[in-house]
Image 1 (cartoon, rainbow, N blue to C red):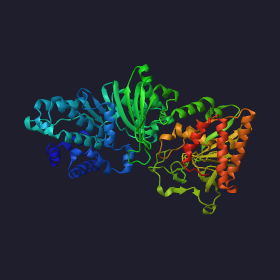
Image 2 (cartoon, rainbow, N blue to C red):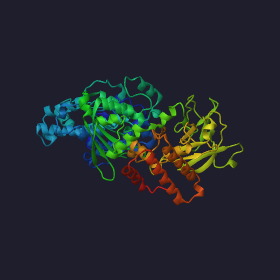
Image 3 (cartoon, helix red, strand yellow):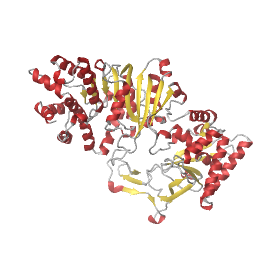
Image 4 (cartoon, rainbow, N blue to C red):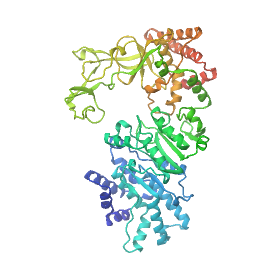
Length: 629
């Protein structure tokens, strides 16, 4: 390793790279030097995968990596993706071009170079590079310069990637330097530029990588403006960086070329990501979806490997078989889906559905109105919204420039309205544990709930100018739905009197209904039922093992049964009465609560015409959760 570091110093390679990448911050240069010094302590460098990247990740603070959306890619993921797209030494990869448009310190490109070197060993029939001729050594270097390409917006990562490649090619470069007088140290196509500047020409055989995980709200405004001006199809609405990288990756692929990415599993069925799923459906064969779960240090992100092949012929795309690999109790449980089915699922990748689930979802979607459809009906007046635009803890801050209060920003103390710097001494709480904490009048504030139960009330000051409290009438006679599920069940309750909530709760009100039996208590019974919980899990939450969050758009998609004959209306009234009993939770025994819920679920299965074997499957799904009211 010392020889390799001496090689960098002798040829002043680090200084050249720093100049090429326009490194100006002293702390960035110190970081690179510190990483290289730490590499000195590694004895078996060649046995490691991107050891420089691994050290780099440890040196960077967690929050700083999140700002960039950077996560170091484990070797097992890199190898799996390269194998899956077909970038292996058994194939003529020396004739094919591979690119990583978010290469970081080079996890994918390092392994690509290693595989390319192995391919050349087999091609020219040598065991060691000490046996290589000058001509073959030159051909190998030129081949790598031409066919292995990387780019990243982070110049520090780009320099580390270049150094990684120099270390892998050290023996060959050292040989050429020894045998050729005045040999010039080669440069490789690893550029410190944004992927958004790349020409969208079909020129690459492979696109691989681990694109950054940044949601639109975390993207700096100047970059967001540039993104929205690009001639792309998926830079619309609420999007993540990774979907832009997916579209760009597909557009720069040659027809029949392969792409392999690891992305957040929100890609699979989140409605805001439907635009990229449709783009994949109409432009590629989706070869594999592998739900690998949590593969990085971030406690929230759970991941999916997506392997696709660019395909311009519609018939070939639709008859393609998608291989689905699921990480459950039994690892590597493989199943297959015909790509055409994805269109029938409204372009959701519902990879956890078995045949019974598919029939159930089809039945619910075809035979029942969605809540959002009922909201649009002229005879119904229904509101679904969020509570006060405020975090649950109730912290706010005053902006002198706007002369208004705003919710405390999560990151920098900058006013989102005027970009003014905020004073941390202006931070206040408007949520209080008791009315005695404040001299002003406070209103009840729902702090936590469970099914049919408000667990804790607090109190809120509603006199802060600038805070969006919304119309107080919204907070009366309403269903309250918690964003976070519990044991994969939806948590909702009902309160008649005025009580505010934060934006982490949804408020559902029936202001007017032409059907007496379609009332607030009946609707609450549906929302808390096993059937709709199962619908939610299978439509969205089943792949999300970590912190499944119920989005308002998913509530709008809930299939809702409108009772329309006398028999159904009687059942709806029974559900309403049992729900009212459950809301009086302090007055009834726990065993009765469980029995009431079973009866409600049974009535709902009947109303929705769910076959007995399906209802048993649904109940069994929740039985291991040890659910308690």
